[in-house]
Image 1 (cartoon, helix red, strand yellow):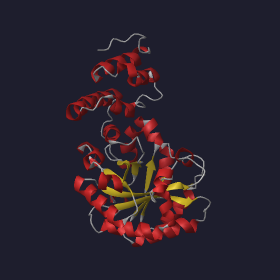
Image 2 (cartoon, helix red, strand yellow; image 1 turned 90 degrees about the vertical axis):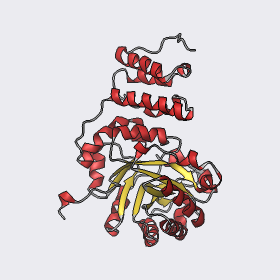
Image 3 (tube, helix red, strand yellow; image 1 turned 135 degrees about the vertical axis):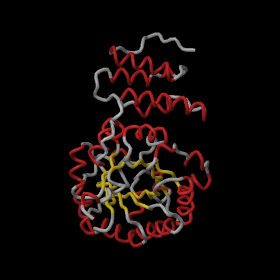
Image 4 (cartoon, one colour; image 1 turned 45 degrees about the vertical axis):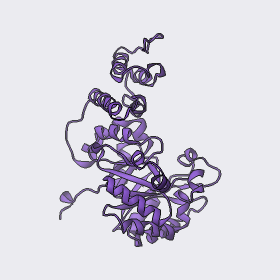
Length: 340
């Protein structure tokens, strides 16, 4: 098969799982901008699926496909149960979080601290692979605390791969489990992309994607020369319009790009649908699209309208009209707003 006809990896480009951000409303919005980019849920713990409201945690919109469920946990039985549920609900992939450094996750003995226990991860991966037909993948760091040797992450990947995992998403920073907040863990430990690139060279049969600090199209392109995929995090959230260029740039799909205006209108339709189906107010939906006019003239004022707490009693279509007017005229919301 020629290189030109080789199918592109499903992990070629993805939006990272981000707690409190990549819920189903966010993913619906992102899917309006890109057809092919893989979308991930927020991390869902096995405990939440064992003891909590499964529908609340696993429900998603059919439009979101391809969409992956990220799990947090370490017990093989619990992971298998959660993975089975995820597959039954129709997720395209089950991903295990071995990268989150938060105190809450450490207390639960999962997340980044699992990198110190590769055999436990391998046991969990095997348990999941045994009960689902969709890919089981792992997202992890390159090291823990002051462990900076390449051998540490190489051996972790090798052990977990033997259990049946064929896809690894590598956040190219160490996780410092003591002394740094989750936010600081995304910024302070230095990025060492070369370790992710080396993993691909050492494990050519595996799919290796890289994550961490990647923002521009040029950066994505450069990494794709070294690895199979790139995962973009907060830049995709803060500057979502960039996603509208990805299908053409990285998947060869030349379908017409929707206008920002049509995307916003579709989101208003979705807000009305969410309210009719669940009683969901519009503002938990609207918060995810606040970057839609990032960098555009009038964009800040447009964002202020959709963020204005005084407008919460209004139906979303009326808020939309105010936002469009602010964008067009460059004016803020009036000091006095008539609300029911």
